[in-house]
Image 1 (cartoon, rainbow, N blue to C red):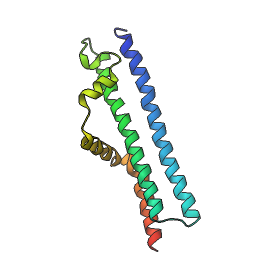
Image 2 (cartoon, rainbow, N blue to C red):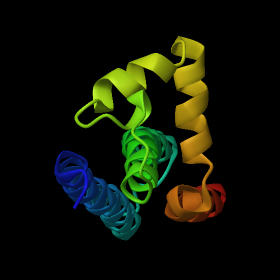
Image 3 (cartoon, rainbow, N blue to C red):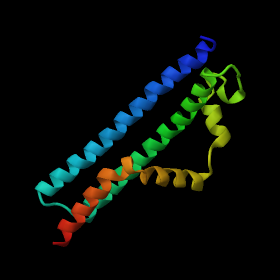
Image 4 (cartoon, rainbow, N blue to C red):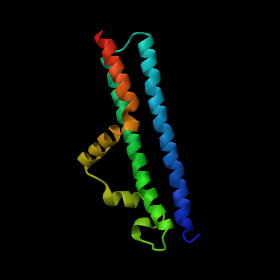
Length: 138
């Protein structure tokens, strides 16, 4: 292999990427469980919606971290499949690469909201909030 240090970094980041996916699923499962318990004991309402919105945002923040890893993985994969070495794909520069493109505070909030609106992130939250709202109104 031409760039073993890049391959090592790719493997480490790929494992992290997969781990973030599992943790995002855990957040969704926690939300579903909390909703089910609240529904069974008839404690739906604004507090439950607030908790679900907080968990949704936490999931979006988690997926944003994962998206940053994805950007680095794509740069590494490009480098590993080519013969050119650039500063973007110098091994072990994940944080430096991120700092070069880090958005402002408003940009970070936009990034979190963008992740929150992705269908794979929003799916359970929209359904559970809708069910909660329907039952709270009846």
